[in-house]
Image: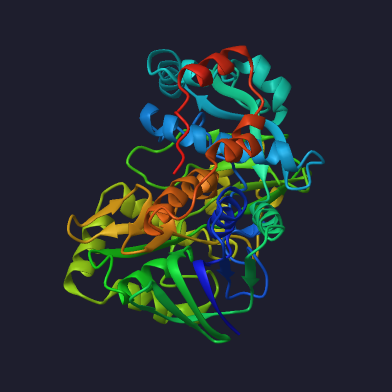
Length: 462
């Protein structure tokens, strides 16, 4: 198998699939190929069992600043609009209540300040503060068994999108392949990428592909390929594997706890599974692993390639993991994976959400959880919590969008503009049609509509 293409996308997860959809449907690029090493699309981190199934808007994620929330909000609305447009039967997603829960005077005060003084109430018109009685109406198990004298407050919204990102990625690919000039090659592993005068030659185990522009959207492997081409030499990965615990029918929607300060990882939350609301998932945990894919020892060597085994990488790890808050957190999360002991240690995290939960109510979810690469800047010896993207000569490496799959379409929109620059103005991007297919279908109330109108970004075309 071989071919010549204007654009080749490496990686068939949600990132690569969303870019394929965007470029195939809303540009006039003549020929596009997507190459995926697995036998099916969205088989690794995008698979529904390997992520939190959350569409992050920034409204209940208390580690977000208002500025970060504004950035994430548009990205989430793009994807939510796509789901509203193409998934009226709710096969790819469910829509349920979600809330961030504050318990005790300090947490309640923090949420009140966030909503009123910091501006989150204005940014999210559907978000509202609710007290104990309303919390109990929506999520009875969150209140039952809790001391009646303890202060409680939640910021709640009905816009709790629970998403099967694997099905969504496959939907993107289905939409894209309806267009002429689009080829999808699964079961095809990239073995080498070489720059040429006109672009890149991509060698695979099933033939050679030549492209004018290339996007590598292969998760943790993206940095590995970038380094092989001389990019990202000051970056290494801190791979974090997230696991979950399961319980029966505890929650109706999604309940977050407040983020621990200084921790880059998501706060523990509980939510009903996207396809089976009788199953409640609690997590994620955050265990450091020396692999690029969960449960695949064959990727240990790939991790070592990215790590580099040099002094700068070791010093960066040492600096990050010596933090007096982060180190105990990392060690505690290692314990969660131990048989029986881990379940006992994780129970108090579950009880933050559901006080009456008992040990027999939860079990570790075998086979759940993927690897989320955290970027380490070896020049600063610190975690880089921003979007992990490297732009080179006619090539883009997407290591992980921020935050995860929620901003996949916004990331794809930006990359499309960059790709058209690579292709020197030969093609155009119909961003108006792209927005009509996605964000224009996002349901708003009156205040939200006014805000969207006043804050609208001018449509750009190339």
